[in-house]
Image (cartoon, rainbow, N blue to C red):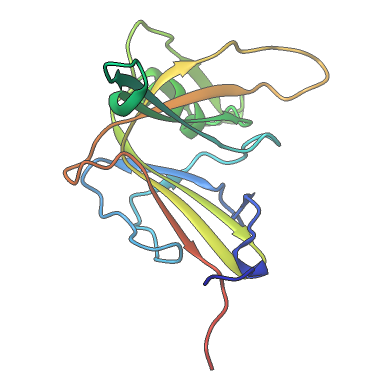
Length: 194
């Protein structure tokens, strides 16, 4: 019988140093298969995510099958959808590329006359499907969400106010990979044997 184990109680703090904790790469990039595996160099980060962190929403719609007396005897899956959502807190090329697609972001390098300039084309199109990784930590414990096929399908309202960062509210829709899986979650409790 399993007992209580404090090492299995984890918080979802970002695992970031000089990069952010959310990474993306072109589909076909080798995916990590553990919470601590090194990411392929093709994965890039867009930087800060706001204090609300990342939300994984799982929507399972079912249809109930009643028997003759109208008691439910079974439920069958009618629809499944898994989405991740977060607020990018940087107006970087990478964050804008996540939200609108890399082809919509044009950057002109800084010169002696002006700083780095960015032009964003907001178009009626979705960004391409990419692979995504979210890294989290809790002391020595690590957690990682891997989305083999994910597409940003919504960018909610952008608010421009004087007392908060401009945020890019992103919703990532996940799709089935070749194994029939939308999202993988890996943990490593950080407790090693001697």
